[in-house]
Length: 153
Image (tube, rainbow, N blue to C red; front, side, top):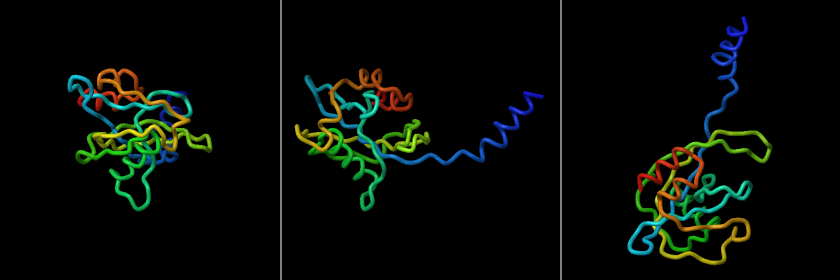
């Protein structure tokens, strides 16, 4: 009987409480580093200090790529960057909202070629940033799909 109740809960009841994933946009910032090797910019999250890429919610009046560029400026100080093409990938993760409730988030990732970083930017006191190789970055982030995007660079 317990197995039947569990199956009923997971197959029929629980789906009624699931909400669709929310959308975020992200900037996968990169540059040509020493000896022409590609480097990507990682930043720390404000809450846990884990390594991530700049990301956030869509912004009214901006397309997804423009919102990703705005996040790159606010979170990492990317002053001069350009989006290379459409989204290069998507990754999912669970975000805890200010209410304490978790929400599933799908994040569109845009490649941003960086030509200038500012030392002073809106979240400079809240985050650290670091240039690393794409492979090292893949080992530093937690999201499996983002790891794959970084490995494919």
